[in-house]
Length: 135
Length: 135
Image (cartoon, rainbow over all chains, first blue to last red; front, side, top):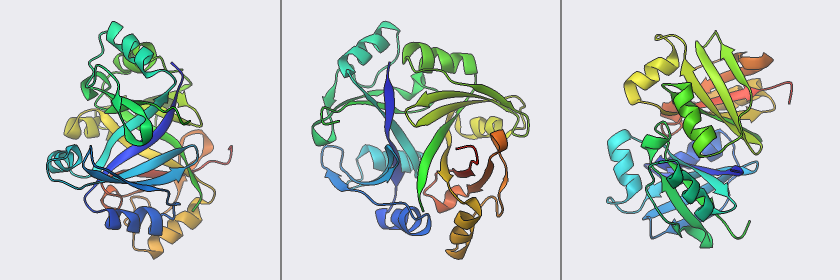
């Protein structure tokens, strides 16, 4: 399966504190910010060549990002791979007995369709697959 | 600071089991493998556009990767950013009071020079900076 790395999602407690390191100290460029109400997060992208870091601050204590920080502290939450045909990718993984969080594509940010693979199948890594018609 | 993502390092218990997912089920291409005696790991690269995943299996139970798996289980261990001038990057970070693991560049794989930033400075993410004369 042809895939590229769309972004690395990093769960942070405080977006301003995170930007003080990633933008001000490390000196990375800052891209777009986006509120994602469905995930109850605010996302700040930092472009990094053809990929990006995505800093994620929870906007609600019940969100997946807030719960992840509660359990494991801040840090890398997921990586997102861009694929050409998400339904075909999921069919291939199901055929091989891979445990999925999402059996079918669901709506993601910016008109994309996404699905998560369960971390138990991927050596502890939470992998999001993304089909993005705009790219 | 201009940076690109060199790779994402993933600590795995068993390289063969990891390849059964990342290569066989997910279908990613497989690149070079490398024994890194100084880190006591075997590394297997999976190219992903201009970046890569690096699966890391410990070859010694005292290695950093073995200890990380013992503490936190398998999963993403570090991300590596490629920079043009590592000494300048470290000077910039020191000036801003960022906690470093390596105050000075040290030899990395394949003739590169590397240094780690402490995860407490980077929202829980272990960041390796790499200056690679061959790229």
